[in-house]
Every structure is written in C-alpha cells, then in structure tokens.
Length: 79
Image (spheres, one colour):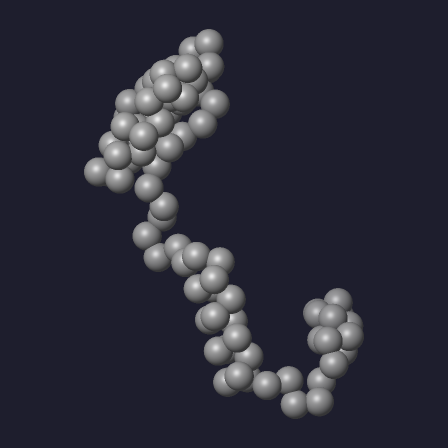
C-alpha cells in the first residue's frame, strides 16, 4: 500500500487515480496520520441507478397486492 501526503495527493490526483485503476491502494496522510484511502470499488457493487432499476424490477415481480406501507411498517415493528 502506497502512502502519500495530502498536498501531493491534491497536486497529483490524476496520476493517483490511474494507479488505483491499475489495482494500487493508496493511503492519504496529513501530518503523518492516515486520513483517507483511495481504492477501487468493491467487486459487485452497483451504481445507484443500477440498484434503483433492480428494485423496480423486484417490485414488479412482488406486488404488495392491497397491503399498505403502513401495515408493512407495523408488521415490522411487531417482529
């Protein structure tokens, strides 16, 4: 894992992002203390738009059929 100072990270962000895209994990420090980590996204993580699309598809396949959201909330509280 590579460590760089905050100033270096700011001035060389493009290069650091290229390194992250190549698989490197980079710790950004401020006065020697780690404050952030640059790394590639976890495998299998979807974008927000992809998650919303998947949720809509799930709702089409699993309709509520007359059950209100309020009833679902109350049912969840009882469990």
